[in-house]
Length: 281
Image (cartoon, rainbow, N blue to C red; front, side):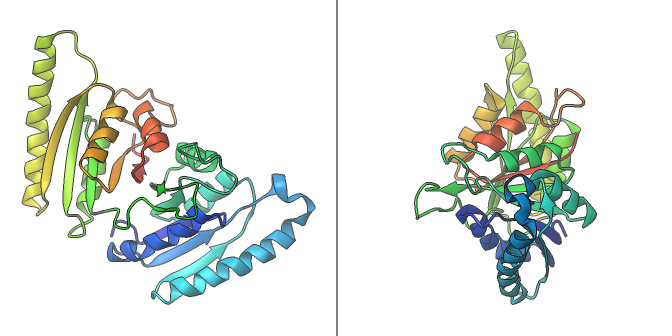
């Protein structure tokens, strides 16, 4: 299945605690094993690393017991080091299929769309990352943007190999999905004729993709927009009531060697809707 083994990152902030509410939905997608990680930041722990680790292990064990009641195989990790490096290293060593992170963590300025630990992990991770987003982040009413993230999915398609790979991964999800919306954005055209030609070509390709997914039992709609890709994707997702935007870190035109493309960067940072990023190039 798509996500059988996941790594959940927590710093014990309210948003990161809410991440565990995602688990029941992921169980429906085939989840069997969970690793919970909290990194003791050596920059702030000073000479008290072992004390912090012991206290944090106790906190994680309480969560572990709750998740085991859902018949999951659960383990905890409390390494000391730099959070981003430890998260990525653990994900690779444990061969997880997904890293689950909150958009905001402890000490993050709430007006920011995305915390630095989450963003830096996105940049260097070779593992898919699901970024949970939140409403009322500054209040006691803080809650996840939506309870069922895989219900109504927006998949941007720029006709690169990586965007098609993302679509194929989502096809594996199955009946949990109620609707998929493919969106293609035309960013530049030299003339009206070129724009119309680009629209026709995009429509033909999207229709082929739609037919493929419809034949697999999915309800699908397509959108063709003009303008800045990230802006149009987010606008469409919000307007259509999407529960998740899923895309590759790299798309058409991304310079080789760049850790994350501009469209994925903007959506990860600015989207109000949860984002699932795949590391395809």
